[in-house]
Image (cartoon, rainbow, N blue to C red; front, side):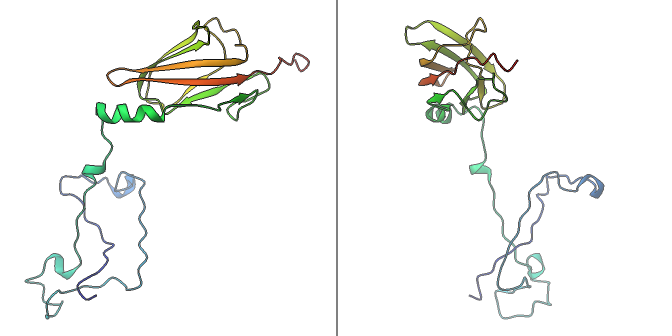
Length: 188
């Protein structure tokens, strides 16, 4: 494997400006650990000394480049947004009078997850009556439903239809079943 080496040294893109050492030098929190059996050393692909640096590239230090440009997150891609509609979900489903999202005995809460930045979430009962509607326009990827209707009255147990409308991408229909616990008025 004379022609094959592993390199753990990194170079900065010439268009990138570093911060001062007091400010952390590189503005990120990325850490890379490379564990190799052979230690880092200068290398010449031909039969010559690595001390002669006139004909060397990068002073005989290994030199590789890569980019994440093609795998980086993008914005405004409608085709990807349509594909992501399949990931929208409501949890827990079914809801048996308790979820991990609740903070106390009288809190009832479920989450609608994997939502895009902008969408309209409309909740109906099985009769088609509007229960609640949310206009979401923030970067958070989930929405908490407190299991109350638009008049802030707790819902009854049963089956509910959740309609998620994403502009320019489409819609997703979810079915949710919830069993509600009786209100405990003895602990007030």
